[in-house]
Structures are given as structure tokens and as C-alpha cells.
Length: 191
Length: 254
Picture 1 (tube, each protein chain N blue to C red):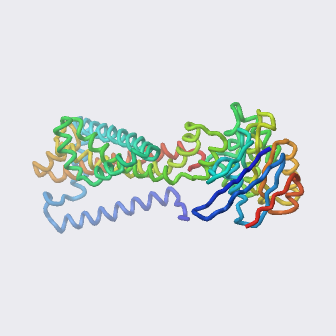
Picture 2 (picture 1 turned 45 degrees about the horizontal axis):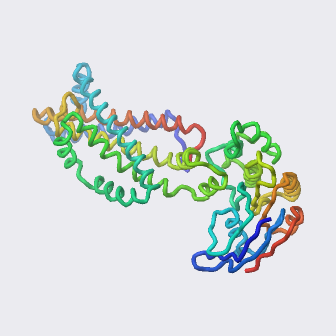
């Protein structure tokens, strides 16, 4: 269980959170209007931002993330982008992950030659693959709009792949149907 | 996007440009009418051919090539290392940034004369070449490091890349393009300063020393011939480097 206690955070002097208290379960979907702090909250959970005051406790050591942007290494192939987060030898395992996100045969492609949805799936595979050697409870998967660029059928299949890993999840989502697919608790942030 | 040109067309363009400037040179030479002031292109080509069949020519060209290349390698290495130091060590930026700017603004002749006192004349050409190359490479690499994609660095942090892995997977690919361009640019500078040092210090046997002799004895065709040798060697090295970088890139660039 992740606990957020009296969390305050400001962006350039403008307060985003002021004394936020929250308990996150095994699966939590965060929603709310654009600019209300969903990504900021995910970044605070990942340790990429430091709160001005308050505390976040119970975050596992191994945090993995699908960022709002794909953040793939442009000079590495799809396969290599996954392999770089795996312990060596990583190629076989990375190929398996590519298969799971339905990108068989695209391992040698570079990000700039892939579609938005394909890149998103590589980013998803990378996040799921990271820390795979640990028990699921020892990890946390943070997802920032993970289904961006997917059609509805693909969204269903990718949501089911995420759920099959049984990793604790915190996801920022916009569409109600995506929240329904992932399930879990729903946190609505207000601006 | 600039359309690509076929090799045949490219060759034709180069030959046309050479013929055009050769003609301009020839006409200017006719106009001046004095071989001591502006020799004819054919006199220069003839003199170059005469020089090329002598052993001292190759010895001088080889020695200059060695001087400039040694200085270039030292300059590229120093510029790259200092750029990393400047980018990652706060105190280093405070100390190094102004020092490198001073080096860049100082006339090369001042350094050559000082180095002559400090190092002895044999080492001055390589030293002055290195001194010209270092700031160019430093500036390019430092800027590239500063502009490294922060999103990728954050990604590296999340996925637990260590320092070496981040260096290999993010920083090095990010600086490669600017680094290659800086190397190509600084090659010309290395030749200019290296040969200038050879002229001032009269290092023997070198192209600079041959240029100095040509000046003393008013052998203008020799001066032009040796200058042509410097231009050819500089272009040759630049081409070799460009091919090396393209080969190394292989797949994709940062």
C-alpha cells in the first residue's frame, strides 16, 4: 500500500498539491482534467520530483514507468530499447516481450520508422520487462496514458497483458473505458 | 531537403569549378605579368611535379602531416575530455570556460612564440595545432552535452542505468553529430596553425620550412605548390575522417 501524506508541491511558485492525502491500492487509476497534476503526481511517486513537504511511503524499490512521451532511444532498435533494461543476456527475453506486445518482426526497426502506436507498445514492453526477475509485489508500474495511439481492440489486448503481470499499477488515464479495463481504485483530481 | 547528386554529376561540377577558377587565375596572372608576384597555374603545376619526384618533398610533407595529425588528436581528446568535465563538474565550468575562451581569442602567433620558448621548436607545430582544435571541439561537445534530451536522462534514471550505461547509451550518441562536425571544422584550423608554427619556428624538414625558403628566395611558384600540398593534405584528412565517421555511424545517429 502506497501512502501519500500531507503532500505539497508547486511548479514555479504555482501550487499543484497542497496537503494531499491519498492511499493507493494494488491498482489505482488517476483521472481529472488536463493540467490538474496527474503527471506531476506520477512523477512524484516515481521519485523524479521532490515534494515541498509531506511524504510518500510504501513505494517499492523497483519503479518502472511508461512516460507520457515514449522516450525511446532513437539510435537503438525496438529490440535494443527493451533489451537495455534487462539483465544480460537480454535479447531472447526482449524478443519475447516484443511478441507479447504484438510487434514480432519489428525488432530491427528504429523508432523513427515506427508508428506512434508501435512506439508506445515498445515503451510498454520496456516498462513491463524491467524488473521481471523480481516478484510482482516488489515492483510498481506507473503508466501515464499508456494506451495513447491504440485502437479500441488493441487497448483491450494491451490492458489484459498489463493485468496478467499482476504488478501494482498507478495509471493516469483520460478515457472511462480505459479505466474500466484496468479496474482498481479511481482517484479523480480536481483543478 | 537538398536533392542528392549522382557521382558523375558531382565530378563534373568539381571539374567545372576547378576549370573556372584556373581560368580566372590564368587571366589574373596574364594581367599582372610578373611570375614573381602571381605565377601561372601551369608553372605551379610544373613546379609541384618537379618537387614530387624528390625525396625531401615526401619527407617534409610526411613530417608536417605527422605534426598536424598529432596536434589534431591531442586537441580532439583534450577538447572532448574538458567538455565532459565542464558539463558535469560545476567548479570545472567556472574555471575552464573562461580559460578556453581566452585561448580561442588569443592570436595563434602569440602562442607559437611562447611555445617556442617553453617547448623547443620541434614540438611547437603539434602544440599550436592542438591549441586551435581544443576550443572548437570543447565548445561543440559542451553544447551537445548541455542539450542532451532531459527526457531520455530521466528515463535512464527510472530504468536504473548506471553512469557508464548512461554515457554509452545517451551522452555519446547525443554528442556524436556535433563532435564529428567539430572534428571536420578543426582539421582545417589544425593545418593552418601547424604550418604557421613550422614557418615561424623553421622546423626542418617540414612544409612550413619549405614555405619559408620559398619566401626568402622569392620562389613564388614553390610557395603556391607547397600551399597546394597543404590544401590537398587537409582535404584528404578531412575526407578520411568523414568516411570514418560515416562508417562508425552505421545505423543511426543521435
